[in-house]
Image (cartoon, rainbow, N blue to C red; front, side, top):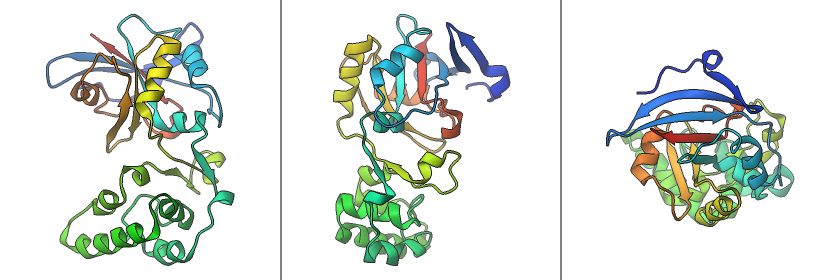
Length: 245
């Protein structure tokens, strides 16, 4: 298992790059990995993802390293974002959002803007159906049906958080890219480091895609990211350099 997290003792700096040593972790197949969470500035909409890797990752990377690239940063770079001005809550969003905790059971879906964005993506009938099924099954301890019905795209919506540490995310929602492998292949071609696109948190490590010649299996990626070395969003560590031992 990885060492317990203490940001102060983990902090390192090399070649002008600040990062945090998240410790070594052992996978189910016995292989071990060192993980380095790289601190960045707050990455804005439209920044070049390859330039970010050149600036923050390549100065400390070594041959054999692979990179976990945060899905939210990729969404920012590719402009796969929406503002509240672009999302106008309609009848169903206004009706369902106040009861989200009892029906939708989705993180942040109590916000009518976020729920409306889900409706815009998959249609009102599917969202209403998912809400009804979730409401019926929740008392029996069945969870997660809402997102199974509406799909992974909706589950990947992030943002519109009025309690966010960053004002930018209070008015902005990010949506995961669907062409993950294409993006990873392009990024590897430009930077030379194998890339996997991850939407990770303390609950799930959702792998969206990886470059065609990524050297780790899906299970090995999950093992290396098991304890969410990315940390929370306010830590600004969207890049995880994974170093197989």
